[in-house]
Image (cartoon, rainbow, N blue to C red; front, side, top):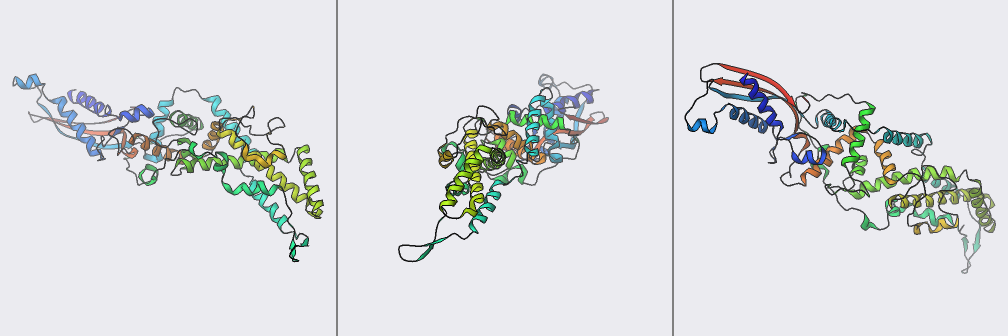
Length: 441
């Protein structure tokens, strides 16, 4: 009975030394087996266990002072940790199990349903696969392949005339970069970068013995973990003071080594989606198509190349699509709403206004999704295992910012362990006990 009591007290005492920062910032209970020293080893935890066992068998200070002895004369012969599970085991299954325990009481049904519906609409409409830039390039190649009439210039030389397509001014901006177009003021963007080789997803990780690393991952459980991301991680426009990388959700989606690079990838994805959506609306809006057709007719008639009318019309429509999409990005990155599918009421730029699209300063379409809603879709569509690995990186980055945790590593965070405790007595008797303890045991 004494051995049972000592094992219980000692193993629980080991678990009581959980990382305070990991708990405070992420709600997780795990023991940092380096104990803030930078020397990561389960041997450290064995020493802590052995010390707790011995202390719980010793006389009190008063008893020692009076020279007393114990009736049983028990002492710790040895205490070994024979099994373990760490946060990163089984591709992060241990971490996700603790996250689910933390999130167990959350109600998130309607929120997740909305994200799933948005993603379904996006995919069914082909917005994630329709490359409008490529279609615009192919159209331009056909225009360039047509030989234009020539004139005799002032030097008496034959010179090919320029088509003077007004859409060229807009289409020439495609190479500038989505983020530069979306956020002209670079001072608004975090300049934090990291050396990813120092973090969990990019290094060889410590592994436990497979003591308790199984996890049956259903769609409902994944939805809970998705919600956990948004409770504990910041993103553009909703950064967290505790965070090292400011755009953590963007990092979960793309895993680049800087805030700028991750935000740029989001901007590229949003521009891709918005162009596909806007093209679908614009090409089916008869009044706008007629306006582009009229402009193309006038231009090709003046330049005496009527055979180019259709190609020029589509060039104008592609430019209009691009201009409207950049306007959408500026709205989203300034905190406004943009619907997944545009309508006559939510379309922003007229035909003439598209030529000055870079003067757009955000605003709101009056309905639709915010930046965070589009970001939820991007993160939802990202491979689950990649998100788990990148979440470990984020945790390491944030915990290492805190005092005494410069060497914190998730692959040395103990969740569950099996111990074999051997007890001896001054009378020659002994006892050995083996127990498994963890935060969910």
